Image 1: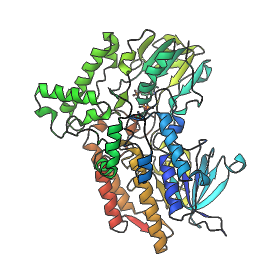
Image 2: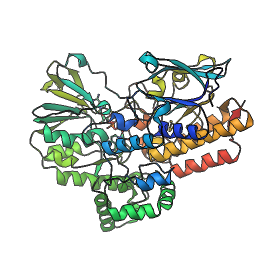
Image 3: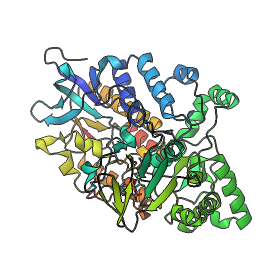
Image 4: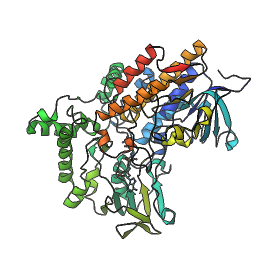
Length: 539
Ligand code: NAP
């Protein structure tokens, strides 16, 4: 409970996406006095900000949802196999209403600094909104960053950006009232998951759409469809089993399709094609489960990649455009995308693709943008240029630990922590789905539930024993960093440039950020708890 004499809270939670919401719920249930701060105007996190046309989850809705409350998962009905942004935001709002989560959350309040006070052994957190909208400073024993993995948008530092006279948008900060592109000449920069979802819909409205592509991406048709009531009823009849199976999968989802463990290389060419075709037909991430070695063996991966390249060639009418759309990297090395008619969109009149791999976008001008000496005049530019992933929002909060050490400085060469949850010199601070945890490689909702439960159980455990401070041991942190690196080196992930490695942000150290393998990670967490929180020091 709050300590009324000092006004010190038990916990401050930053972010009111799915991680922050569930953490606030658990803290309330366990009798901790907590306040939440959220820079957005309401709950929902990613799904509050990413309102671009076509925004849809790439994890199936029966899996991309909370499992902590059986009544909730039984009563909520999803309308689609893959839910769209609006429906997921409705769900977040429903959860906030159902569990009275807004009562202790201050919206439109961004954390501007968070400092560990060595003498008081407390966190002091300042915001730029909240009380009277002028900001406030509050203190707490625990400090929980639930700011999400993909929440700090990245707009590259293009020369002349401010001189462009048309409208600009970033997919991750889309206007709430939507955008009407009718009759407009639109440029989209980027061909990641966000662009791949937005492009088919923008193309339907815009007069012309020019896509500026630096690196092509693999995408598998999502094959979204209305929820099949029989499938829904079947899952709901055994939801606990379904969830348990999900947690046993490497990515904490994917229960609706088989995960084959046999090798691409041992299959006959006919069997290979048949299996790839079957999984292409299933749609989305399932494609990676067609064989057991796609993510681990370069030759196996080549066959899967070649299958997709041949699909691109068969869908896209113009052979030159088709070749430009064919990636030559490892499939799945960058996050695999799931789309609705992405490749076919390039067959529409008015849609064109500009390769900026060799000749980057040089500058923005008043009427448009320039690459390879050619000026493209447009009315609007959509930046689908991604995020400063995993660490961007942690650094933006200006966090400092013991002796005033800035987190930015501690993590100058890349994030180092224990279990992806805590870092030395930052006592009583937690990161939900932080770097070094399965985070973006797993079902995020399952991941945030796991972390919120771990953190609040640890707080209860500490409270029962009269501990005021918890911090990782240096040795435990060093071993964890080593483990995260070893796990990623078993895969093909480090073989290309991607935001998983921070390589989309100039100057960011090249470090593989997430932990590979949700079940493996879960075993480790369970072992830590069973051994009185081994690797953590209490005071
Ligand atoms: P992203 O994957 O990082 O893609 C950014 C795109 O912008 C890339 O194509 C990148 O090219 C391009 N780009 C960046 N700087 C550029 C420059 N200076 N010039 C030209 N192109 C430039 O970002 P995202 O599409 O927003 O997706 C991020 C992640 O969010 C996804 O991987 C996924 O995890 C998540 N997401 C999920 C869904 C879903 O659930 N379906 C939807 C959207 C996003 P390079 O590749 O050459 O760097």
